[in-house]
Image (cartoon, rainbow, N blue to C red; front, side):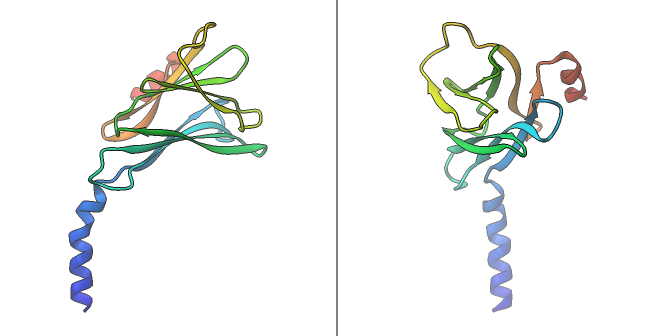
Amino acid sequence: MRLRTALLALLAAPLLGACVNDGAFYEIDNTREHVLSLIREQPYFWDKKVNLYLVVSRMPACMRRHSMGAGTANTRVEIYQVPSGAYIIKAGKRLFATETQTCVAWAPIDGEPPTGMGELKGVFRVKAGELVFVSETPDEAATADE
């Protein structure tokens, strides 16, 4: 019986290894207490669909997980900050608005806002098979590529 269980576990390992379940984060104030985190979950290895979630966090005041719907393992997620301090999240062709004061506000946006997207802070993307946040700030971008 133990041999059968061990054999099944060994056969299932490559199948489960194909699933995506990871995340990366953007430190807003260069602290881990104020972040936007992207989480990717692929429930089934045979499905190319990956569920995307954004966790908005300003600890200890608030933290909230918001669904961004489905994407692929290579969906680029861009982070923009508008002058009011709110954020626009671009996942593929979809846009969302959020904020970090209460972490509650979350809304899909139809098209680019008339006032523009704001300042691009960086992009969540896959690099060498791993999800990373690549900052658009010149100092941070240089260290991210090293």
